[in-house]
Length: 217
Length: 342
Image (cartoon, rainbow over all chains, first blue to last red; front, side, top):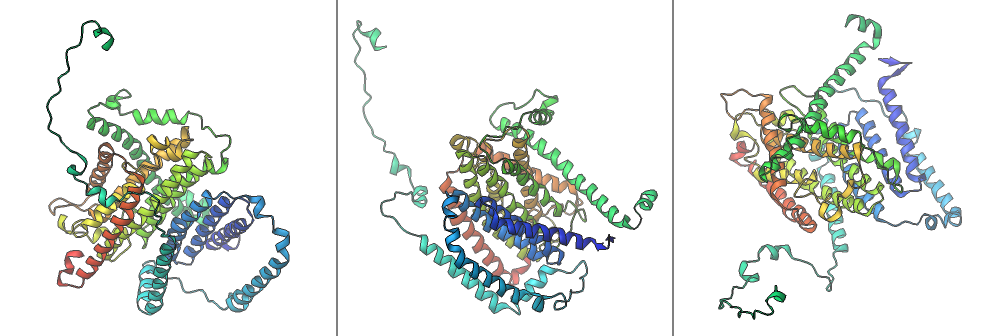
């Protein structure tokens, strides 16, 4: 099915790509950091859409699940709580420009050299034949991860584990002066720890004098 | 049909597919909206009954038109925009809350072959959609420019991210048993009567999943994001009229969704518990109805959790339980008793 010489898939691709480029640009040009984080969310979401077009549905959904659903939520969480003074952030813009411009330019040139047409042109990567509808992308990916690339996969997970432990160790400071509750001790509390029943004689109030009875009431 | 096909010419197959898909979407969303409306009535009736009250009984016979009256009332109320609020994001918040709650229904199977999109990674898709729903709450809280709303959204973000891990791990157990991420295949993996449903071999995971689901939907006793006694109404304190109603709809649609998932993954979906009664969509409805009743029952029974206890329960109790049980299930699958877990 074609519209004005374009396949429907092409139209979807160019729409998503345009949104992706726009969102990516806005991430670095917008002034409000919360907006920047939200544009990054939009960029991830549209990137997932482009991956869907490549029939990589597992990766696309995982991109949304991990980056949009978890990483960016924490990002937003931090960015929203920061009290950022925008004027102060832009203070050093002109003084840093002479250094930043060559560095940025060099990085851009390097990236173009590597991911440019010479290495990643349309003739280098031939489009794979479309798979039948019952082809399970997920199962194939799992099979490859746990057979051919098992070592790399395990290494990556160990590195992540080390990063988790390091992050926890860095932030786990036990302040001596802070008071906190220990829930495991709380749930072990017995009645006897809190309540003491005392046997005592009933106290009988002495009958009051008739004159100040009104005031007492 | 014939003249329509002639009208669109070569575009007809695409138009026909789009049309049918739209009809199917309406056939899912319209009853869902009805269910959401009557779930609010059911909640008020059930909690009223549990607290020895009558509940709404004025509008319509037995109060049956109450949801309609509420809806019309909210529709005609003004949506107040706070002066210092971020207008765009303030209005985007409710939309982002309800869109994923409906989008997730695309892969939910209602019966054999009765599903809108029978995709391979259906379960992952649902997890992704439910995790996106948190943006509605966060953005609403931030854009309202109110301290209470902001506190509510921060609480909600931390809580949802924490419980998502336990929820995801609980579902890993289901994947191991079913050998598939496709919801239809997961249900069919449980065929053979009550004793083959996954809630038996995966009982700890079922309990963890359902409690995490209550936390994910911000329902009592985990409703600290609203916490009306501490932070007034949390993230939606500044919302009124239809914008408020959309948050309400999203919460109830999410409740129905997570109950549906629990029914599909642990309680055999549309399968009948005994062999002499045929499988039917009605079984699914009954199971979902029961789980929804649990939601209401919890709300009427339990006092709200303290915030640090919520975090402790999620991280220090549920995640260890799920990890231990996943390792146990994986180990048992290598033994002669593996058939008990499939």
